[in-house]
Length: 365
Length: 126
Image (cartoon, rainbow over all chains, first blue to last red; front, side):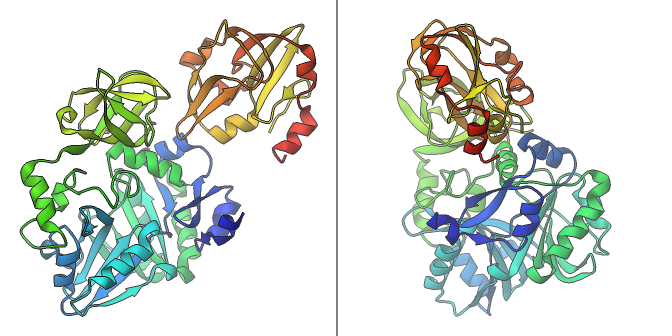
């Protein structure tokens, strides 16, 4: 049980355990994967409001006169279009054609940004950014001190409005504000999330985390607010076709292959940008696509994707039964000949070749 | 969690109910609870004679898939067809309408050798 002992705990670990959560190791943390029932939690977020404790995520502060220039160089998206109070989805390309991590970039002002990165990559990202910091920016890793609650679903806004004078109605998608929520100051709130259900993410210092969690649940009681585990977080993001680092993108995948061309801007130079521009110009030989099962079956990570003749043409990177659509959905890299929407492919599900069709994402229209 | 006294259990979380030389087999309350919402039950071994611990099918939940292991040797006589369209019966009624197969038992003593309720409860920590 050596591994278990080494697991980190989120600040509200005891709260989750008391709620009866099933805790599992994830990205070096002991995390709530399920509280009651995955489908109920999934539907709860799609129709009402649910709260995820995603305090395992990493947060870095980047400060300095050349902060914008630095981020232009290390991230793939165009940081120059960000204004104060806006958030941008982006990735950190490596120098070998792949991706170090995907992340959110928050612009506080032109000399100060916050980066939100995957828990499993905190150390790798930190080292990579330090290594490429030839711009004299100052960096601080504030991950350990911060809790992060994703309040997601159509009732998230009504829940949080009860707790703050901040004008949440006027917040555009992918923007943020800082202020007081539930009487707790120095909180950052952004209209972001990983579910496609709408809602907000609330960054709060650990000392205030329990009070914030309780206040959110009290405010949301009238909307049947529920805690939601990582299990439903995964089915929710898969229905939207959102990439998960480690599954759909990794150190060896180009953002162009991954369908992340929209966050890969060639109007500026960034790490290895020439390589990705060539892939874009020549067309990638494989692409990450979504598919829905026609035959009954659930695709899962690492299952083979075949053509009608039984030749391997790709591999599933994410897959699940969709609780909303009640059918198997998945994503995977497929050789370019089969990536057109409507192409019939076969998934090798425990040695049965079951029919699927390449589908435009998000799966949930 | 419910573990009826008249059943026998395996470490792979199947239950066995003996009626003469016919055994009814399903998965336990503990197993269905660990799996979560069951989406598919796939058993295509009807008519086959299999050894103890051989895989006779699979059960698939939203997040996981598990093989089903035959608790005792014998011939699989019947598969619960209701599970094709209503696999959730395994969640709602694991010892009743969620049964999986009926089988002709090769050796009755094999059933006696399985875990009783108390031993199984200990096995799953209840």
